[in-house]
Every structure is written in C-alpha cells, then in structure tokens.
Length: 94
Image 1 (cartoon, rainbow, N blue to C red):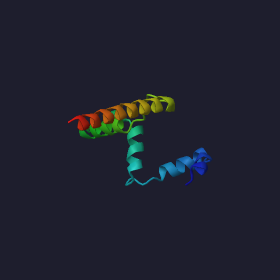
Image 2: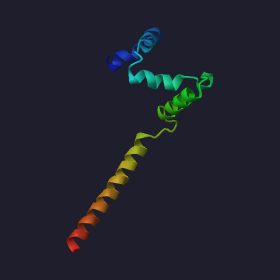
Image 3: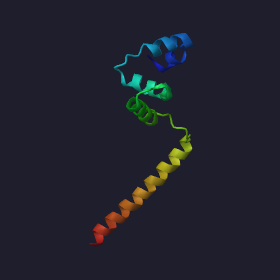
C-alpha cells in the first residue's frame, strides 16, 4: 500500500488492516509488545519475555532534530578525516 493511500485511511479501515496482521509476522510481535499490559500476565517468565520485548521495541522518547543529527555526522566526519590524515602521516614518517 502506498504511503499516500495509507494516510487517507479512516480509523475503521486502519483498525481492520491492523487487526488482520498475521501472528507469524514480526510486525505483529512488535506492535503487541508495545501495547500489551504485562501486569495482567500471571506467568513470571512470560511477563519477563514481554517486558524485555517492550523495552527493545519501545519508541524512543527523546526527539533528535535533523539539524542535530547533521551536526553530529559532520563532527564525526571531521574527526574521521583527522584520524585518517594522522594515520597516513605516521605511515609516511615510518
């Protein structure tokens, strides 16, 4: 389904598609881990399993803007270039 078509879905169509995801799909497990109430699970090992998946599949609460990401990438790129330049200097000297 194209993204534009997805954005035009009504809530009932969305829920119908959402509920039709087969349990064998990894997406099903990810979504279930985000929505499951682990306090209602009696089995200790199963609760531990779902809590672990909940942590692994959680949506990050920290927002990083595109500008911050670009600044970090630029900084890492400059550091790599400096490292590379110094590395080749040491090869040249030795």
